Amino acid sequence: MEEKAKTAQKFCGNCGSHNAYNYPNQVFCTLRFSKGKEPIVQTLWCCEEWNPSSQECYCIKEAEKKQNKR
Image 1 (cartoon, rainbow, N blue to C red):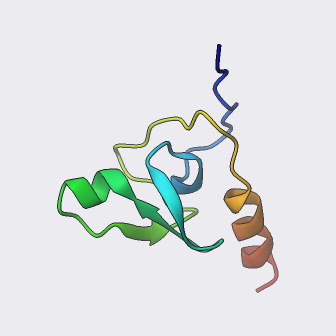
Image 2: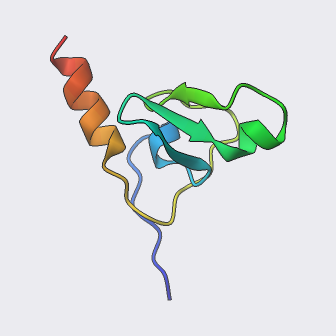
């Protein structure tokens, strides 16, 4: 049985609808794409249709590191 990744905060980077795009800053959201909305979003953003990912993704950690370097 597959275990869901533990989620502390909701971000596009830990949503089940995201795919790699401009790593680690942006992701491609398949759900937004299917609804005709802008599919390229910030990794650390979150929309109202967020759903938990079944796999852990490092893009949030990397995006936070990059953001903190600014």
